[in-house]
Length: 254
Image (cartoon, rainbow, N blue to C red):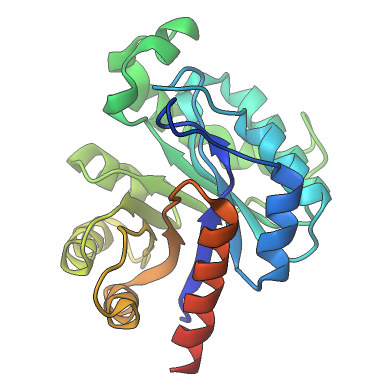
């Protein structure tokens, strides 16, 4: 396993006073030309501040790139009828020539329940609905009833709670988390893999801001079972992408 480096597309506004919104086409092309491995979109109906719709964002990114992985980080699957979600994912997999990675989660509590209420979904039901959707989603994506048959993309499940760990072990190829240190990534993966009936899941980590020796920290993440790191945005996507590309080059040359 060789550590992959990804970045988040500038499509969300976590702080209305400091918007992180930019040209999706330009940023996607820039990331690919810089040699990065993946680009990602966040997802919600109503978050703490406005953000663009993830499937539209990723389709736009796919249309202007050729190589780079495009991913949901993460799709809130329970906000959508599962057949409609499968159609979006399979269409994206088709137009991108099999470059999709599907992250699935149940939402950051910081965003509250407004988005779920707007979709007619009880906030307390989101975990159960996610499990139900993941049970049928791969067959819907692979089948030809709602879209052209495509390869089911790799799926990872986000979250550090017991239910999320069980969900990852049962339904996913990988597990995702935000800003956990390497030792906690390893501990979570060990628990998940104990439940995974022979599968060995790897981690996707949205890294914290790296301080000190970043190469040493990245090596610790890889040793802990991390397949890819996604470098966090600071508000200037071009600077972030340049720094991520520089880290990638230095890491793989070390």
